[in-house]
Amino acid sequence: MGYREDKWWVAPANYAPEVTGQLGFAKNLKILDTTLRDGEQQPGIVFSREDKVAIAKELDAIGIHKIEAGTPAVSQGDADAIKEICESGLKAEIYCFVRNVVSDIELAKKCGVQGVLAEVPGSEHLLNKGMKWSAEKAIKAACEATTAAHQLGMKVTFFPADGSRASLDFLLDTLDAIKAGGHVDAVTLVDTFGAFSPEGAAYTVRKMIDRLQCPIEVHCHEDFGLSVATTLAALKAGASCAHVTVNGIGERTGNTPLEPLLVCLHALYGIDTGIDLSKLLALSKDVEKRSGMPVSPVKAIVGERIFGWETGMPVGMWKNCKDSDPLVMLPYLWTLVNQRAPYIYTGKKSGAANVLLVAEELGISFTEDQVKEMVNQVKDRAIQLKRDLTRQEFKDLAAQVIR
Image (cartoon, rainbow, N blue to C red; front, side):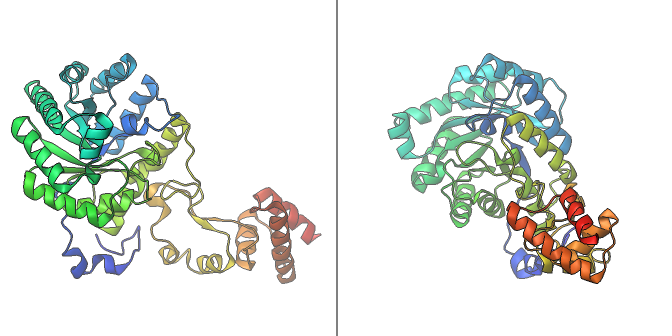
């Protein structure tokens, strides 16, 4: 794959050898979706057992590699949902979230998961001032819990919360001790408060790989609006699994959104994760409905108004190239993610090209003078309404102008 394919056209510099030669992506990148756990932690979201099972099946159908199905200790209903997901015959690996408490590990085993994400605060300040635990106590608990999980036949991904804000020596020493005294299959670099710069995340991933000699996963939040960029930086530095949520739902500002991360990997870096991009839109809409959290109409990849223009100049250029080479005016084709074809809006910023294209769509014929009058009428009406016009409003204006 390169900067120009039949479904996208991105900056050629992305694929320059001087750029690609610096990338350190792991082979066979994995995606772990935590919509059912961290996504539900967004205030106001409650997923029923039916919701959780349905979303898990949709995630599996698009090819997500790992599903974090929830936290069984939260409620009996959550434990039952996780158990049902595990019994659904999905191809994805099913994990659940646990505290570093042996009883949580035993409950996870009863649910039937293949692995656990075992959490303990990973920064000295969150551990000492938030949890009121010493490092020694946290290490002891983690060693006991991760050993128990391993003995029960489950994979262990250790999850040191707020690891991004820890001093690097503290983080690495703590993880080293847990790895030596317990059992760890992978470690997650957890940016609980979205506090990493992409460069800081990449640096930390490299240090963790050098010191721990185990797979590193990355879990970011969106507090500074950098979750996708930071996750990509961590992956380029060698992290092998990215944690995401559908529509980016999650605590506070949310988590790394699944949809733009996947399309960035595919089109900007030429990495095919094996996940079906054409099913992202349907998944997004279902999670939007079940979560009650609306998706912005201009949200990258899944927003309903991202393909189209109101301003006259780009519409004019689209009119000229849409049939011969539509990618002249688009970074990727709408068909890549199963969106609708570009829609021409009519409003304050519109020009003659807007009027002509919409008139063609609606089967309306204008004279040259009528086109000019229609442009003026559209602008005036949009200013009055403070929005673009509906097709019916356009037809009503057209009828007046033609009369």
